[in-house]
Amino acid sequence: MKVQSYLSFEGRCDEAIAFYKKALGAEVVQLMRYSEAPPMPASDMEDGCGGATPAADKVMHSVLRVGETELMLSDGRCSGQAEFKGIMLSITASTDADARKWFDALAEGGQVMQPLTQTFFTSSFGMLTDRFGVGWLMVVAAA
Image (cartoon, rainbow, N blue to C red; front, top):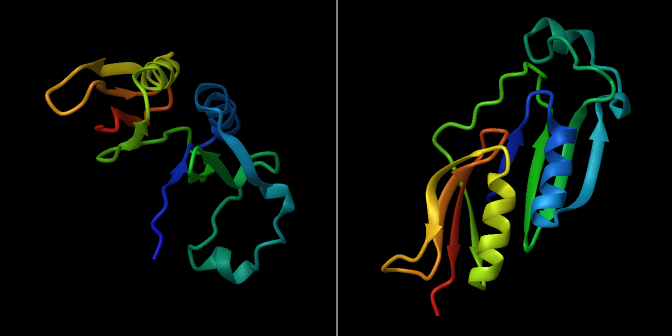
């Protein structure tokens, strides 16, 4: 079994992809736009599974490779109201320098909840919410 994160940016997915490429060195593995999808059957729209299709240039599905992990991202229904409540993504860095680099990059335009600092359990630990509202926890692997 494999559990992966799927984040809906509600219309800001292209912006998020560019941000994570710059901040974390993420690599786009897959990207499909709504314009590439086959037409939705009318029956799907009638039973509430469809609804209005977002603009053709919006991201229907994407996969980013971030280090050893793949994150899936989408524009969702393009409501403009992305909400990432009750979850955080965690990065385990090998060094304090990497932790600092990624923490500062993710914090740009976001909000630091716990500054990156030494704790009793690791040399660097911090928490933040990035500019999209995604929560991140940064920790250096214990030696």
